[in-house]
Image (cartoon, rainbow, N blue to C red; front, side):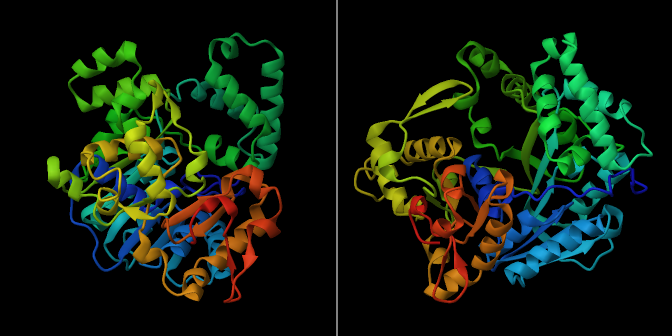
Length: 473
């Protein structure tokens, strides 16, 4: 198998994938929700994706938000070439890609960044590369900046470590990655057929085995076959990031920030009397069985409450990107159990969001909402966001403008991704300027036909106006 000096797979590319929660608007929402006051970018912002892979996520962000100046860095030159293909297909001039490892990245002529993403990178590199990545963040993250660290985590990944070791043992390191994957899949199938006691005892390993047998080879190679596989507890990752001057803010998995939504009743009293942040997050990780965390950290900032907290939502808007108000569910199932929306707040809230994007300041003045405390409105809104029905957005002043202008920037990349990925769920996204991130097209309408999803627009590009979007991009 071809690997660099760092032991990272080089002969099979990672999958094309989009992570919408990498978007600045999502990270800003997490900080606002958690009451973390920090300096915010005023005239545009700078964003770095360190370990950007094939760059589809970053290109989608660049196509969705022209205020941003984006830099993607990856040690794999083939990944960078693929990212550049997407950039050119989208006609994007606000993103660039650089083929460098973490150590070389520190010496590049780059700006200070308002946002840095380490999405998965810390899970698959060795101790020296992790140190170099964090040194980059230390040197390049602005005061008030946010860093997203997404990583494999214990204890949720505990049953996967022996499964990975079993796959590695089934093949030779000298084989190409494709051959190693074939051998590993044959061994996994035999293990499953054997009635393995390990698999009977560990349901998570069984699910991972099934996914490995049927999964994308590029994903399997990069998830399991790199020389290094790092499985920290939250407390360990938090300590590493704290050492470079960034403090934990919250999770980009929104329900994980709320004990009401993620802690079941039998554990609530234990959770409430647990004192330290590390210990409380461990309770959450045990309940949720999280194998992968999306943690947001900030350089600087202070916790505020009351009116000062509500003011942190200034500059954010909210919308229902995929569903009409009439079809909105009233009940949601979270790890803590079933949660029902409070109709007195939810009905006028959903009606307002359906015409979105709409700001919190506009929401609190809406008929039916003006008499409710702001905290109640935020609480119901957060349930909708945690339930994947609403999401933070950029706001009307950023979403609209001239017809041609709002289509021209993001549309070519949307057409390119639909041409390439209509049948691939993880990459079936279109650029959504109103949201500031990619919008996922769920399977049913997407497979109904590309002609229904994407139509020509007056400027000659393509828009992603579909029936369920609910507002013009």
